[in-house]
Image (cartoon, rainbow over all chains, first blue to last red; front, side, top):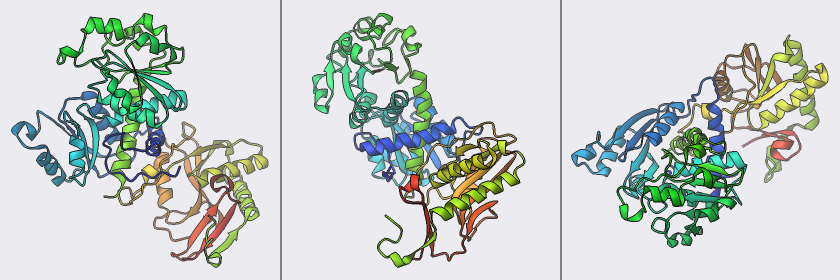
Amino acid sequence: MTTRWTRKDLLGLRELSADEINFILETADAFKQVGTREIKKVPALQGKTLVNFFVEPSTRTRTSFELAAFRLSADVINISATSSSLAKGETLKDTARNLEALHADILVLRHSSAGAPQFLAQRLKSSVINAGDGAHEHPTQALLDLYTIRERRGKIAGLDVAIIGDILFSRVARSNIFGLLKLGARVTLVGPSTLVPREFEKLGVEVSHKIDNVLPKADVVNLLRIQHARQRKEYFPGIGEYSRLFGLTKERAKLLKSDCLIMHPGPINRGVEIDSEVADSLQSVILDQVTNGLAVRMAVLYLCGGIAT
Amino acid sequence: MKPGEQNPSAAVPIMDAEAIRSALRRIAHEIVERNTHPERIVLAGIPSRGVELASHIAVFIREIDKIDIETGVIDVAMHRDDVGTRAELPVVRASKLPLPLDQRTVIIVDDVLFTGRTVRAAMDAINSFGRPARIQLAVLVDRGHRELPIRPDYVGKNLPTATGEQIQVRLQETDNEPDAVWLERK
């Protein structure tokens, strides 16, 4: 392994090389082992301060970053949109500069605007980790998805991965597409044409509007959460119709190969994008994703936060 | 690249493959003599060369005592005291020790003992797995210059050095070169 990590920030997977992605995954192997020790804590980031700055709410991702930071012995502060001065009219840049003035070493940012993490990374000495920006990227989610596939199948190159659902508004889909293609997987996007437009083919993926044609050849299906159905009505056929056409029902799951992995970034809508029996089946690796998310985030915090700045 | 390839006079051979073999064989004998319960020993190598040395020592112990010694890997990168001060981070690898450690003797195995900071980090790492009965230390070369109160229990070769000098250990599996120890003057 000749790659060395030199980045202070993790903004997206689009800018990373395949070697860098593999380096993060290999580093995560070491941190996953820490979770099995009697004392699940190492001093790697002792004395560092991490700020979880979540302008958009997310309990799951924030908690995962928080626990990852604890296990690396960093100190953690959580700031949410409502509790921050952003609600009082302060600009993002001023808020961030205030955090830096408090000697925050690592800033984990969730923001509704694409490019917000990059904006701050260019202006701050602190490490900036993108925890999801608009419909742009969610790199740690894609990394934990890649880690889970690699752990279960031993490789990523050559696998057929179907990503199903709201692709248009999904940063998880975008980061997954970049990561999977760089590591040599074939990617098929599946959903209604309003949510999976043909433009995505330019990225080097296949687009399909018929889930039943895709499931039989898939090695992995990654189901995305339907979350904008209420806000963006014009794109959705309606929840019931969506389930009928694109939900992974018990019946439809029979089309899958017996070793096909079923993934979901959570929180799952049982009965909408996935049936309960399918979500709890042996093929489902949804809870492995959660466990692996911790290891992957420890690796990212260690790599970005551990280098001298 | 072999050490000192550009300037061969700068690298002095200290041990060849045979010298390393007999040093490890002697360490294996000492380990068996000093431990009344060799079956409780775990040889924990520090990656990468310590792991390779530990597996060689385990083979010698099997020849001497007809006993299979358990081996493990103890990675120290995430327990180091200099994270955040280096432009390049040490690569972290997964540690692996047989559990539980209670009643066991963990013998840390490394190629070169220098400041002692790596060994301190290794002891911290071992403690996060549990509480072994005792921890011992085996090294191929002790080059001096300790910065912590740490001493080895088993030494292949004592080699007093100047601070500017470097010890280069090359092992077949790790480096794809014949086993050898070199002293490099800067």
